[in-house]
Length: 274
Image 1 (tube, rainbow, N blue to C red):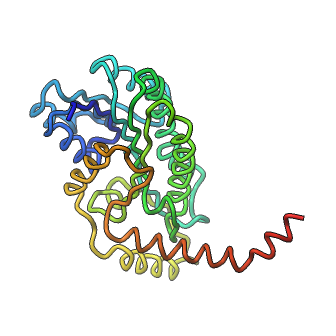
Image 2: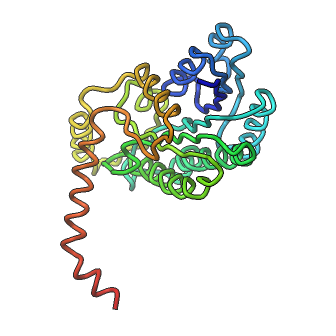
């Protein structure tokens, strides 16, 4: 299989790091971005010129365009662009501050949007490429205490599905990877938490219990590396793919409930048509 050039954001930990290693191990080249590139020093020492570390805060649009340009100039092409940088913002909707809400959208939505826009001219010119957007089971359903996170992933899902149709004729593919719970630090050091309101104390306890029930056995980020290689090597790759066993059953339950409710209220929908 031909060597691929990857551009991966958020490569310092979690999926980004594991996927970078998987690509490098099989002989691909990787432009890996992180807020602190010192976290990539061990990979540079091991893989040498096959890895290009780039310091990047994805909320900086100009820096995103410069980083993608740097990667393309360095390696001569781009084949797989992975928008992985992001974090989880915990907090009930009423508890979120303006800064917390805006920061979540700036990183999870606009960060991915800017990198995508920066990469597209290069992918169009070469008439090939694959944009991988790291979404979540939270990109198609929603639960308590992560509402603004869901909002960011639903936005990512929406613009990415539209994008897939817009760039198909240029030979460019788009895939939304939708993981369930994994043993990354998404809910740990990387996460941010709003100050809880006392009136929601019992509801928070209920939300935490339900979350533990939904994802009792977290997935292995290292194992996910084999999965992402299958996705990027597929011809054609899927528009959407779950990572983990649990998301499919959650999605089925949610969509069956939606369809039943829409069917129940179809007479009102017809009434509104006029």
